[in-house]
Image (cartoon, rainbow, N blue to C red; front, side):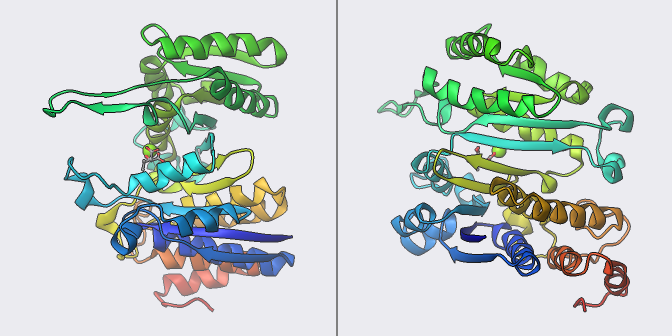
Length: 372
Ligand code: IPM
Ligand code: MG
C-alpha cells in the first residue's frame, strides 16, 4: 500500500517520540513491501518561533494532501506562564482538528499485564481493564464563543452542541461497542448542563438502533470516581470534548504511565494519530521521553488502513519491550540507561527480526549505544 503521511513533530518531546514512530513505520514498510512517504510540517510553538503562526498554511496543505497525519505534541512552558499571550501553541492543534474536521478522538486504555504493578492503583482493581474512550473533538466548550469584558474582569466560554455533532460521534461509539463487549457509557453532566441533556436525549434516541448494546448514563463526577474504583466495568465511553480530555488523562493512571496512551482523531476525510501526552518541555532532548504512545499511535494509523497484521506486529514489539524492561525511566525501576531512541531501536529491530530480538536485548543491557 502507498501512504503519504504528514509528520508534525511539534514541541517539547514531540520530535523525539515521533522520530521513533517514523522509524517503526519505515521498518513496517520494508517488511511488508509498502511505500510510505513522509512530509514534515511545523506546528505549535515551533511554528510560532519560525513563522509567527501556530498553524501555518503550508502545514494545513501538507495535512490536507496526506492520507494520514502523525502528530507529536504541542505546548511550551513559556506560554503556560503567560495568560495574556494571544498566540498560543495549542491553537495549532485545535485549529488542525477543526480545519480537518477530526470530530472523533478515540483513546484506548489497556492495563498491560506486565505493568500492573506500575500503577498507583491496586493490581486487583485494574487488571483486565480494556476501555475505548470516544471523545468528541471539534465542538463543545473548546470551540464555543469566548468573551472577555473590556476591563478584563469577566470572561466566558460557551459550551454548545448540535444534534449533528452529537449523532456522528455517537454512531461511531455504538458501532465500536458492537465489535467489543457491547456496553456503552455516556458520560455527561445532565443534572446541570442543558447541552448534556441534549447528549442524553440523542443517545437515548439512537440506542434502539443498536439493540445489542446496553447503555449506561453516568455523570462526569461519578464517572471520574468509578473509573478509578472499578475501571473494568467500562467498555466504550462516549463523552463530550472537555470531559473526554480530563477522563482520558485520568485513565492513564490505570495504565501506569501517560507515556503509553495513543489516540486516533478521525473525520470523514482525514485522520490524525497522536499520543495523548503533552509536550513535557522539561524532559525534551534528555532521551527520557517514552516513545511508546507515539509508536502505538502509528499502530492505530495502520489499523485505520486495515493493515492489522502490521499494527499487531508493532503491538507485539511494544509488549516485548515492556516484558523485557526495555522502557524509559517513567516505567523502568530496573535499568536507568534505556533512552527514547533505544526503545525505538528495539521495536524497529523486533519488526525486522521478530525471532532474534533477545540478542539485541543483551546489547542494550551491556550499555552499548547502538543495536546491531
Ligand atoms: C489533548 C491535549 C489538548 C486538548 C491540548 C494540548 C490542547 O490536552 O489532546 O488531550 O486539550 O485537547
Ligand atoms: Mg489532554
